[in-house]
Length: 321
Ligand code: ST9
Ligand code: ZN
Ligand code: ZN
Image (cartoon, rainbow, N blue to C red; front, side):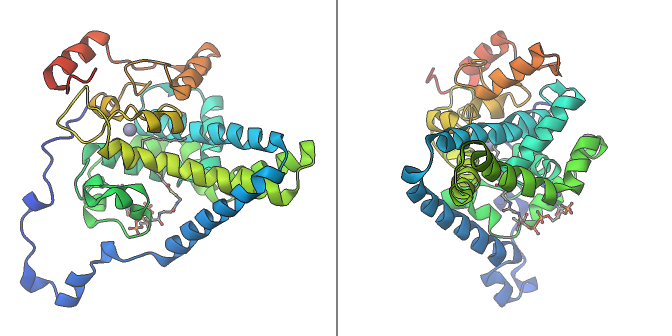
């Protein structure tokens, strides 16, 4: 994707006033895109309640089950960061078919919509950040940017502006389309069956404990870590590369989101494969991609030259580092 300017896009206010006479008053109260999708509200509430219950099971579960849950958290997190995000949404490096198959499976373990949907929303997010066309527009507040955007219909501008972007590379990728076609069974196996069965089979954990800790709790924490990039890292932190945009460098998010909290850098240089000035530093995803490079599975990694980064910091940074 070509580097893009996230400032200067028209905001909702600049798109002109709503013609009040054409919109019946009842529709003004709750617009279609603000209506709650009750199915999602119920599922997300159940997931969070189930996760609180899972916390109570930790003291009585096998320590290897905790290790497994953390390991599988990283595996599924990489399916998002190294897969949907850096490979498919940004094309910041290339991957051979075996790695793309592996990443598609790891991505299904994260259950964050299929790769095509995820990448489509993410490209629109970068192009139209902090406007109504941004699926998780942080200008609508912390809650909306974090989880609220998944509980209501999308703003019509998301579809309208999104339909102007090019996603032909995603539709042309057979592995992406395979994952989309068989998404439900893949999710069933990768997100729920595998994390539940491994502790039960290998060290005799009860299926009940392994399901709640390996599947439910791990999935819920992973979702919240991912959403933190949209909420925390779009609202709080330093802006050493471009002080004119919302996305910020946020250490807490970097640590929980396996290296994705360098968000001011990432929105300033979106095609950099390490999403950070500092390469592999605090960045498990970059370590993973580098290992794949040495195994011959990843190649053509894009890196913004240090000189360009320094000049940009001097020109638009907040001088915080
Ligand atoms: C989840 C995703 O959690 C999380 C993503 C976070 C992203 C973070 C990014 C941060 C950077 C990376 C860091 C990663 C860090 C990872 C750390 C890991 C440790 N453009 O969507 P629909 C069109 S998912 C163009 O149904 P509604 C299209 O034609 C959680 N067109 O809209 C589409 O039809 P089709 C689990 C677009 O009806 C049609 O509109 N999943 C675009 O308004 C309808 O689309 C859930 O909870 C676009 N961008 O529904 C499910 N978008 O697809 C949540 C749409 O056939 N989703 N179109 O082509 C839903 O239920 C619904 O999407 C909805 C909106 C209710 C939210
Ligand atoms: Zn991105
Ligand atoms: Zn962002």
